[in-house]
Length: 102
Picture: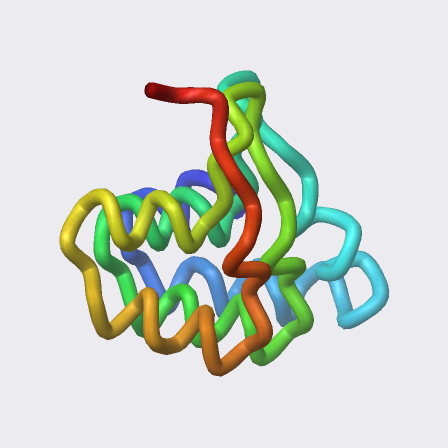
């Protein structure tokens, strides 16, 4: 799921969702990689809005943060993906979270 999100591959992401079922999707999509990123964070950092929407439609958590305290909203905004940031805000992303980066 991380690779599909990182590469922006909607078809692969939907195939994974279909294969593992709704219950397992919530567990897998909120799992963090070695760098502490969830699939939603991967998609938001790279500007894959359609992939982010699929993840949010399947209840991805918007409040997951990495070892530096960054959330998907931080990553979308820092990389200039304003439509993604708007999507996350609409999905109730926590706006008062501080990261640990100066």
